Length: 320
Ligand code: BYC
Image (cartoon, rainbow, N blue to C red; front, side):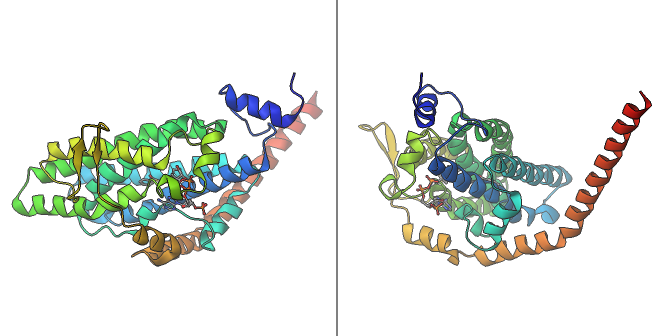
């Protein structure tokens, strides 16, 4: 028998038993999840913007249809994650308000511009590739609703990663100008993709507790290293290079060593000073304001439908 709720919680974490919304949980665990999950949800939604930028300019009908579907998937990911976050006792309105007020973060990567069509390929290959590396372990996160949402998200992300790689593969076999466009996109997205994994482990204030609670299963540096190792092989298939002169195989560690990340740039982006921070936040606020009538109409419709259902039920009962 367990003498306290805290012990029962610890026992569940030890035994890999999922924590569910109505279970007792420490306040700090709840807060840690709300922070990470809501920021994750915001990232999915803000992440639609750089790619949405290319829907009207996709080079063929097939590319356009695929890109629309991908951007739509990101909206779905955001919605599952907002719903999963709501199970922790915060409303969707509150989390969105935190984003719009600049209090909640979203992934640094979405503050960079998409300058050419090749960027859509690079986002798929590198950004979605980094996302998968980080998110597959989250399918085993200790909080049930988060882990379950991640399963479907990861399936869709792996399709996204492949469509991005295929865009780059096509460009890499094209004209000289297309090859250059491909290399240029890789050069610009490589370092920001490495930053997606977060600060180095010794500068990551949340990692230790998150790992103890089995929310995160690997540290930021562990996942970043796995990602680098995978990309070094994949870039060879493209016949392209990665923009890092320090990248080299280390037989002792069995991994690729890589150069120093520009952490000053990372923290500037986090502070709101990246190339597109202002633009992204304004776009979200505008969309939210312009979508107000849709939310109100949906709420009114739902209320009307519920009233009708209630009447139908009462009607049946009174006829008995
Ligand atoms: N950008 O202690 P740390 C996608 C913050 S969506 C911004 O290591 P933690 C996609 C961090 O929040 C990709 N902020 O934190 C979508 C913390 O600040 P606070 C999003 C970052 O949580 C559409 C502080 O720095 N994926 O892929 O242990 C289209 C210290 O960090 C970043 C997720 O959200 C960053 N890169 O670890 C295409 C995955 N890194 O909150 C693709 C879920 C760190 O204390 N999240 N910070 O003020 C996670 O796995 C973890 O939250 C992180 C950070 C690994 C990101």
